[in-house]
Image (tube, rainbow, N blue to C red):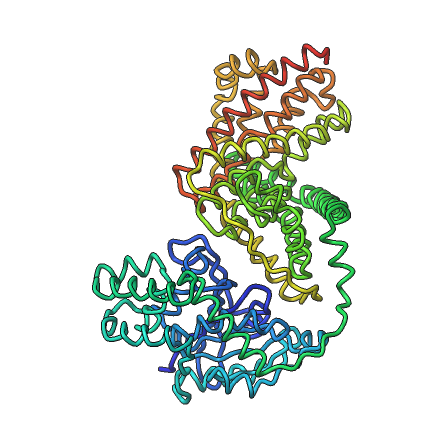
Amino acid sequence: MEKRIRIALAGNANVGKSVIFNHLTGLHQHIGNWPGKTVEKAEGTLYFRGRLIDVIDLPGIYSLSTFSLEERISREYIAKEKPDVVINVVDASALERNLFFTLQLLELEPKMVVALNQLDMAERRGVKVDPRALEKLLGVPVVPTVAVRGRGMHALLEKALEVAEGKRRRPRRLSYGREIERRVSRLLPLLEGTETGYPPRWLALKLLEGDEEIKRLVRRIRPRAAELAEKYAKELEKLYGEKAPLLLTSRRYSLASRIANGSQRLSPRPSPTGRMDALTTHPVLGYLLLAAVLLSLFLTVFWVGSRVEEALERVTDPLVRAASERFGELAGEGVLGGILAGLTIALPFVLPFYVLLTLLEDTGYLARAAFLMDGLMHRVGVHGKAFIPLLLGYGCNVPACLGCRIMETERERTLSIFLSTLVPCAARTVVILGLVGRFVGIGWAVGLYLLDLLVILLLGRLAYRVLPGEPMGLILEIPPYRRPHLPTVLRGSWERTKDFLYVALPFILGGSLLLTSLRMAGLLDSFSNLLSPLTVGWLGLPAAAGVVLLFGVLRKELTLIMLTLLLGSDLSLHLTPAQMITFATVTMFYFPCVATLAALVREVGWRKSLAIAFSEILFALWLGGVMFRILTLAGL
């Protein structure tokens, strides 16, 4: 039986890890979640030199603390799962900053190879790195690569295989100074044989650093070591005049700087993207450019999506009718109709949206957009990175909820998911533009979008005060502008779209079967009468709106379709402008759809999902009734 080897890819964000992963694994890869976690797990396989190799792409992070779920996952995987070799992908154009993470990896004492990537970009910026000098200073093999061109991939695999099979020694220990190392050496005998999965030296450093999780762990099994570490940390603070965590961090940065200076030559050149950065982050022009980029993105997605959806519907509608006639309404409209309905949402709107969004991400512009929006997002208790999943919500709320995984803490993730469900997706845009825009006026439709933004800010601020905890500051790398790697863009976009399909289709199918069954049993009229005190009495809508809103749980554009089927194509003959705006308001704010509920359950569990769903439904109904009365008083 051939030996199976595990390789873990680790490094900062935007260093080319995903490109290397795609080069190594090709089509033999899949995206899932870490067991019990909501962080994506990318795995792939390949054969090389008669070996079956598993490649795990760890999340892009900047440290091995436990401030974020991604950092915790990476740390535990390297320390406890012990992959055969870790490939640390380093950006040669920002060597010193990347080496800070490299030093933390070395503290975990894995078998390691450094992939010195983006050498072409470094040379364009006047940075010349000597791989052999860097290898000597770090004590681990260094392989130069240019991942976007496929350069160095074969040599990288060969070196990783060599290290994994034990033909090279483990990395040597690097010193953080005499006083720190002396105290570490005193702690080592107390930490040997703890069976925590972590190396004793790493435990000693983390104890001195004041890592709360490690202190709790060691205090249970070696209380004497924990007590001594606290004493030594106070001694270091008194000796150097700064807190122990800052002292360890500064020593790592100092060592990273010395290693970088000893292995690179700098001849800085004017950056060709300097003027672009000045424009994209400008306090006034930056926002105008961002608005233009977002408007172009939405118009492109809606233009492409609407035409593709129309084309798909011309094909799928006859199929559903034929299946209903041959196999019955439940099989035709309930089963086949539900599946095809999901596909006509995902493929026309979600896939092109992801392609364009990934292009913006890979070029480096999305990081600048998050930087611009940081101030506004902090007003609702999150930082600028939350802007990215909110942006996803205009395409579809399902990938928006899944996109909130980029937030560091559970509090910020929950708050971002709540806000993302309030963003009007493409389906709700169909209702806003197809009803209000067409029959009342485009100005009123734009007004509903502005109302939505105001509600997001107000409810976000309220949720920020209710949820326990404090918002984190934004630590965001602004990467240089890059030319996107098209295969990586397309593959990543398709993987995200598949994630949407896996989450959405089962719930869409179940909802379709339920609603078709109710209609076949003649129960929808009964539901209309049952809901009339709410729909007619409070919202001021026709009784049929109750049935229509029930269909909206499945897909929001179905509310407009069902309203047209029940009342006629010219809705202005049956609804007043006030009723149209009220109907669109309720549709815009009450919980998006069953697919979004599935995504919520997957991300935050049933309890929080139901709390978010019911609170939004109640708020939408309350706001709809208030809106109807205000508009009626205004004479609409």
